[in-house]
Length: 154
Image 1 (cartoon, rainbow, N blue to C red):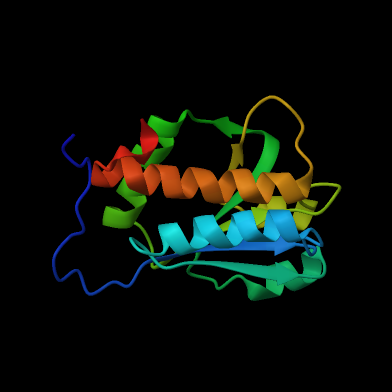
Image 2: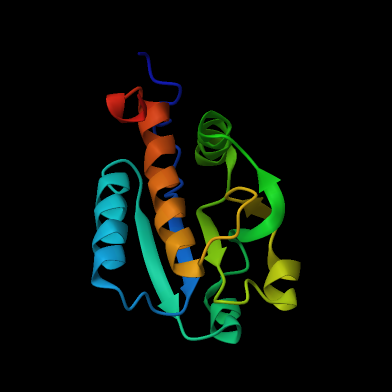
């Protein structure tokens, strides 16, 4: 399978993905899953997870130039291929940092929702915020695999 996206040459822009998560995982199994997907995705694009204690600290961690995507059940839903195309477009034409905000047990605050450039839904079912983080990181890795034409997606 031919890759859908190849890194542009000499763009001069260092792009990265940050998953800004409110709260700690506190589950070693989920931590291992997150670390594994982060490590795999980071082979293609710098990906990091930043944990913060609350929404106010999350807002302070977001730089003014970052593109912010808040996870919210009412957000736009994409299948894996559409998410991969969206991520590929951002990697080609977007800002230097893409920040996904995973809220705490009550979701993202109104302040974070206002700061978000868009909202993304991981599906119609309600997920615990800790599990949403794992699903998001897996989908980021899957999207990068799709873009690179790698067999993981099959």
